[in-house]
Amino acid sequence: MNSRTITVGYGNVKPVTIGKGHPLVYIGGPCAIESRDHAFYMADQISKICSRLNIPWIYKSCYDKDCRSAPDSFHGLGLDHGLQILSAIREEFGVPVVSDFSDPAWASATGEVCDMIQVPAYLCRQTSVLKAAATTNRPIHLKKGQFMSPWNMKNSVRKIEAAGNYQILLADRGTFFGYNMLVNDFTSLPIMARTGYPVCFDATHSIQLPTSMGNISGGQREFIPHLVRAAAACGIHALFMETHNDPPNAMSDANTVLDMKYLEYILAHAKAMHEARLHLLAEHGEDQVHVEAQ
Amino acid sequence: MIVSDVMLPLDKFPVLNQYTIFKVCLDEMGFWRLGVSCIVDESGHLLGLFTDGDLRRKLLKIQKPIASLFVDDVLDHSIRDPHKVKSSDSLASAVELMEIHQVWDLPVVDDTNKLVGLLHLHPAVKALLHPHSN
Image 1 (cartoon, chains in turn red, blue):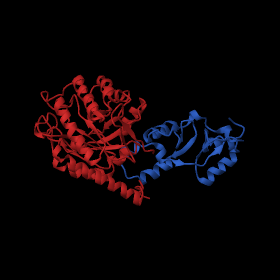
Image 2: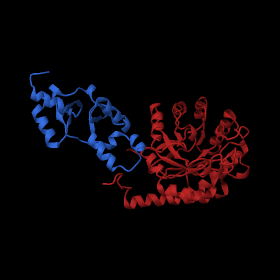
Image 3: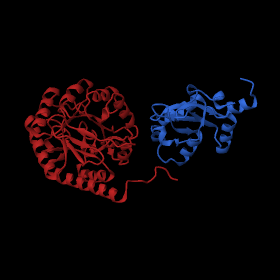
Image 4: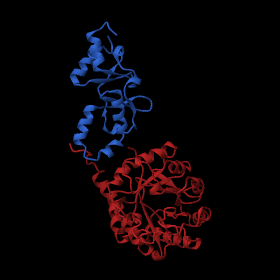
């Protein structure tokens, strides 16, 4: 298995390379684009944090939240307005941006603006969605569905490859454990890495309790630092965390999004764990425990 | 009598590319009613062999879920650099090789290791016993 890297960023933004031999990358921002001012404020704050920690990063925020639990939940600013804001953030901060898309018809426009295009976990095996993402020719952030085994993500990878795109980042965001509950099986990270593509851990969705509060999702964000350290020790190339300066009033994922006041220390932990793992591997060699008992 | 006289042509036994998943390999072996699959690269060069015996050993050793095994690339579980013969080899020597290594099938390759056929024990024995029948 050859390890692939992907490079995110076109035009004037600073490209970010994700994969073996490269620094841990942070992907984050507010779950939804709430307003131009708020998006800029968040980008500015995150940019300063990542600059202090010397962590390459990609701004993530979505223009349309199509998987909300209730019909009256905030749905987003919409394709055109949202992409205008993301485009402006690219220009202002020189940072690559990523947004998900839920309708194949939105893929082309999303790919024209965004440096990376994200496939939502619930849609991770939809052929039309994967094909639309692939044909943007942008790197694809492919989230493992909560209902998917990590080994079966290879089928989704093959669908993307069949459409000619070989720039994929595979993410774990937790796995359904009965109803309204997720668990993290960290073996998913090395299993998905066997595809040869880099892997990402989505911490803030992993602590989600899906639709546990009637018509919205709950979450146990007190576990975020524990899961982040565990994932970094296990081996990841990127860390995904949605963050907000005022979680109780966040317009999407209020119960799971990380309060930005904690972002710096969690990223510092993640970076330290990532580097400690690389140091151990350099000193003692790569993991070589055989797959099968002899 | 030489190997090419009785070998199965490429369209009569499982010939799978290296990215074929394990489940499809088993389907193919069932379809052709043969206990062997030949794994080749994009240009048809032999990379490995997977047999019923490999499957039995795999099932006893493997600890991961069968669903996970089914989606693995079959090449990951195949014998690399298997015993093989050339189409111009004598049939008797090929059958002797089968006996030495206790195998029922031998992939047939050309000078560049490109797969050209499969020698299966039954037609080989039949040809040796009845050299003048078809």
